[in-house]
Amino acid sequence: MSTSPAGSAPAEVPIPKQIPFIIGNEGCERFSFYGMRNILTVFLVSSLLTYLPEADRAGAAKDVFHTFVIGVYFFPLLGGWLADRFWGKYNTILWLSLVYCVGQAFLAFFVDNRTGFYAGLALIALGSGGIKPCVSAFVGDQFDQTNKHRAKVVFDAFYWIINFGSFFASLLMPIFLKQLGPAIAFGVPGVLMFISTIILWAGRKRYVMVPPAPPDPHSFLRVSRSALASGGPGLALAIFGALLAVVSFALVPTFGFVISACGALVAVIAFGGLGVNLQLDRARQHHPAEAVDGVRAVLRVLVLFALVTPFWSLFDQKASTWVLQADLMSKPSWFQSSQMQALNPALVMLLIPFNNLVLFPALKRFGFEMTALRRITIGIVSTGASWIIVGGMQVVLDGGQTFSIAWQILPYAFLTLGEVLVSATGLEFAYSQAPQSMKGALMSFWLLTVTVGNLWVLVVNASVKNATVTALIASTGFGVTAFQMFFFALFAFAAALAFGLRARSYQVVDHYRTA
Image 1 (tube, rainbow, N blue to C red):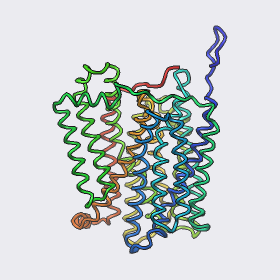
Image 2: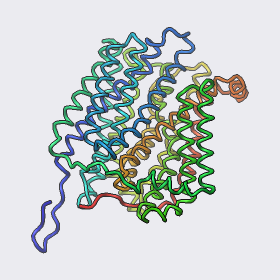
Image 3: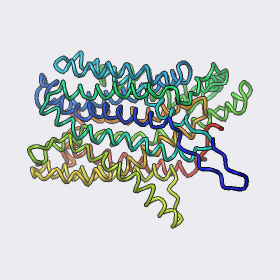
Image 4: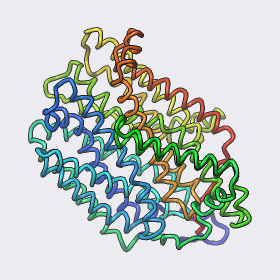
């Protein structure tokens, strides 16, 4: 670290020189991911699912899409665990990136084979999901107490480059799909993923490598187990959660494996966490105070994370429900419905600097500090507002009136503002609130909110296939799609209210490593 002469102001600590390698790696990886993700629904409807009756293809495509997203955001649990306990963050990113490359190759080679194509999606879910908690935490590891103020800038730059890659992928890949065919459209993202891996490897001698934590007798799981092992109502709650998980798996014939498995996971985490929190102090006789307090800190954060899940229910449907709605709108012959998604990252690249350089400083001058928790609360509200708008547009479309796809710009603006305030803020917030030994794991829980959010989408989609539910919706005078849109908007507003109330009593902590 540079020093200043005696009596002078401290020299400004520069951003670590290894950061451009991580940013470049992430930019290429995000182009790869969004390049295939944003054409997935269209490809499924127009090619891979043509064996189904035409009326069933859109619903089936949405189920495949959201099942894939669930997988992508479930595997961070595995990646975070591997990084924290065995391989370290860099090695976990490198090895799972190679798995990711193989998955992208499968998509390009098996565009006419459902088994091969779905295998490719599974490999991408494992590779992309596994590296997600590690990359964000790896960025944070390059900073310490001397330059942590720079981390906030870099996390925003990190999110900006994600959207830079997403913008060009969203703009170009639908054209490639239409004009060059699916093999090329899925092959180009595969090449970008390979380049991403090379960039990561090229910076290997520059990174700060925080080693994986050794076996810890006072780990999160061991402290939690000690708290539950003492018996009492906490153990009863955990057992109840386990029983609900068993019941969830018993419902596989009705709801399918993905919904049942995710429901079981939610039951175990929710009731197990409640049980541990209820009697955590009983673990103090077996573990030091700092370990018990660390577990309590994680549990407090998980409550906030749970209230963010409805945001992802709404946000991720821009690549499924909103694309299918755009198909019903008038547009130029050269414009593809899925290209509308390029508007989202373009707005992100504008809003991040505008918020940080103009809006937030202006609000601060008026005495309103845009803290992380306030940003997330307002972001969820903004996202809900975007769905009120698309719901109104759907009502018009259901009435037989067609209008320009340009009207989708308005809901995209509200949705993107919500994304910037929730997602970009959540990355840095999750890292800062995690004790050092559990950063990868807590980042995994942050990403797991996306899995749960997409689970709600699958549950709602499954429920509207029930004759009783569809009859109830018909009695409201709305079509099924419009009704779902208004339902998701109200879901978000309720979550924002609960989050805001919970945030008022949350004590923010600082878990950046010391210099």
